[in-house]
Image 1 (spheres, rainbow, N blue to C red):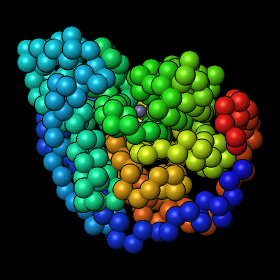
Image 2: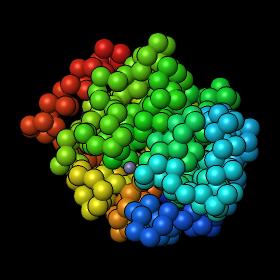
Image 3: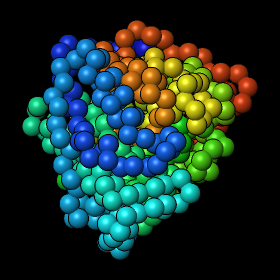
Length: 352
Ligand SMILES: [Zn+2]
């Protein structure tokens, strides 16, 4: 088990950490219709959180992903079909997922934004990337939109990096399982996919026995939490399982699928995190890759105050590192049983 001293010893808090904040007004044009929770106001809430976190911000416009870049993840047929669908005025792609004419540009820039952040970090222009874009991405499949997601933005960034020989870890703390991301990298040992999510919940995947297959066995870790789980369980799991695995994996890049719908104020889900829990997890994650090699990408999160405060807390966590906060003990009850189950399953593939 990683000790607090061991974690803290590997990260000096980063005074003056510069954040590359990547967004684009096209995100605001993606109209999901009256009353839809995945709405334009989410973006300014996240932008406000990052801008007021107290760190220098480099504002960057998200570049549109090219057709070649989209092809890293999506089928040409799907890309063409979605383009025509949007150009024709759009409509419902599934009961939850809507696209209109302006959604095409929003989707292209949302898929390209991760690359904008990565390039800024590679040039040394900033120390952390933060992508505040919509539509989100982690449910999108090779040839299908679902769950408010059109293109799988984090997967596009991950494939772009692995194509350049990098090892990539994706840490997905959105309250929903990133089924699209998991499916894309299920047999891939160059991408480590870690997800904590509510279970049972949409989309229904992400049980702890889903650990990858073939060469990718062990490179998917799912932590399906019961409704009502609090930050103590997230913190314990981060310190005793997820960070030790990340240390062993030694990623060149860390991508955070940062939904903020596990916040207790979120209207769509039943996990009970507070903003400080995102700060704690981000502080730990700051120790697993060198400075300038982490990009946070917005996924879900539907309470505007929770989005603002949690985005700020994420940035502050990366800036300050793990500090001296102790690892809480595992929770009793169902969450504790799940902690034991995930620990036992993960220990078959990794030294914990
Ligand atoms: Zn979500």
